[in-house]
Structures are given as structure tokens and as C-alpha cells.
Image (cartoon, rainbow, N blue to C red):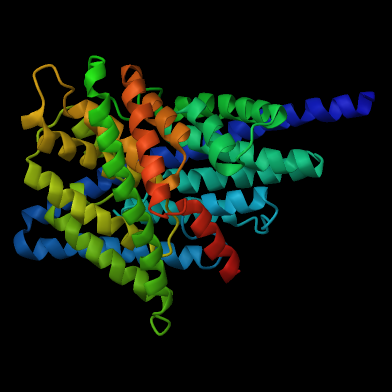
Length: 427
């Protein structure tokens, strides 16, 4: 191997490290802004509640305006709407290109307004897409070869996921399992370098605490594995139904050709705002809800069922608003609800010593995620890193296996495969 070639290889890792720092700065800044947007939204809701009945119109107007503004921002930049993960995957497959330098600011501003106003969307989609865009730009400016530039684009997308959930290993697994579907030593190393620097920088901004700390739980007894297997089967059914609802909602909105995109987004925002006026836990990305359930917070089975049903519909509806925003975080909240509800329904039949609701919530998060995304390793690693629940590895493996097989047997395609095909057809 020539000296020039060796320098080219080493330069790619230097570029990955520097670009990772920028991903950490942008992604950590995005998370910081969203945290403060959540606080501001809570203050507005408290003030609106003090005004009585008329005050309920304030969150309706707030979310409608936020959705409309975010949609207006996204529609000006190709691929800025939606999660963006499908675009990252398409670039890896050489089916699409990163064309606009405006993608990053559009994702940042649009995602902040959309998610901050209360739509049921996740922060991970915009951060993954921004990370990948930074990787693409770094590859060009670093004068890397075409293959290294393509790998850097995917690797920095994984760094974005790691920053979104403070889950560095999850970012690596996401790149190999979901984005590229391959394990290449060079891709792994680029992802490791980019992820390490990205998470390190982001922690200077948002700290290093667990994203979703859960109550300490003992390792569930082995006799409960069949119970978690059944939990995974039902989560696979729920995940397949959710995937179909996401696609069906998008198709219905596509047929509303006479309604301008911004008007449609405002109408969806108004509906979500009405839900927020009723109960804030029904809207937003879902971190507060997931954290409450993982901490063993008490909700009746009826409340769990209502919240599950509402968020099951509100998530796809929010995604159809054509604003920047992801699917992961709402999926995790949906899974936590499903796992907790499963425990509430099954607990009268379980003997003493069975796992508690927090364990079921964590397992449900990974299982529903797997049923929709069809990336079981990513789901398991993400939930383990976000919650610190290493003792739940066997139940997580069991439930995610069942969820993946069930969703596949039901004929449900992985959601990002479907979204990528839609994107390419509409390009």
C-alpha cells in the first residue's frame, strides 16, 4: 500500500473525529433547545389553564402555528420533512444524494418548532439527518474518496442517533443493522470515532445522565420468559398495525391535493393542540411519559389504554404534517405504555415474585420499536443504554425476537424501507 493511500486512510478518521465534534455540538444544542422549549410549553399550558375554558384555545393555536411554520420551513428544502432516516439509507444505497446545504438549518429550525410546539414526533430523526449531512459535508471538504465519503455520511448519522439518546453503542448498531445492513471494519471504525467525539461534546451541553432512568429492578425469574415472549408477540402485532397506519395516513394526506401543505399542517397541529390542552402526556415526543412509566408511576389500566389509543393515532397524524421530526421517541413511549398495560392485565394471573411494571415497560419499548423498525439489536441496545437496565437482557432478547417474527409473518415491511420507497417514487 502506497504512503499516499495510508495518509488517505488516516485522514478519514481525523475527518470523522472533527465532524463528530460538530455533530455533538449541533445535536447537543438541538436537545438543549428542545428541553427549554418543553419548559416554555409547560409554562404556557399552566398560564392557559389558569384562564379557564378560553385558555384551552392557547395550546390549540400554539401547536397549529408551530406545525404550520415548521412545514413552511421544510417544504423549501428537499428531504427536510419527516424523519430523514430514510434519506440517509437511500444515500448509502446510492439512490439519492445530499444536494442542499440548507438541509441542516432547515432540520434544526423546523424540528425545533415542530417538536417544541408539541407534535408527537421524535428528536432523533432530525439529529440523525443533521449528523449525516455534516458527514457528507466533511467528506467533501476533507477531499475523501467516494467510498469513504459515503461511509462517513452513514457513520455520522449513527453519531447523531447516539447524541439524541446518549447511546454510543446504539449509534454503532443502528448504522450496521438499520442504515447499511452490513458490518465493515472500516465503517465500524469510522462510526466509533465519530460517535465517541459526538457524544463527548454533546455531554458538555446536556450532561451524561441516563435519558430514561428507571427504577432499580431485579432480574426477572427465568420462568417469566414465556410471558415476555407473549408480550413480544402482541407488540409485533401492535407494531405492524402502527406501521400500516403511518403509511395509510400519509396516503390519505397525499390525496388532499386541494388543501395546501401548510394549511394541512396547521389543522393537524390544532388537533394535537386540543389533545395537549386535555392532557400534555398525550402529546410531545413522549420522554416524560416513558420516564414516569419506567419509574413505576401508577396509572390505571383504563388510563393506559386511553393514552395508548390516543398516541397510536396522534403519532402517524403528526408525522403526516410534513414537518421535520422522527418516529423513534414516540415509538418508545408507545412501547412503554403497551408493556405497562400488558403487566396491568396479566398481573392478576402472575404469582408472587413476577417482574413489575417497570420491567414490562422497558421490554415493551424495545419490542414495539422492533415490530415497527425491524431492527431488534438496535432496539435492545438503545433501551439498555437509555435505562441502564442490563438485567433485562434476556427478556429483551426474547420479546424482540417474538416481535420481529410476528410483524414479519403479518406481512409488515420495515417502516423505513417503506418510507424510502415512497420518497424515491415522489422524487
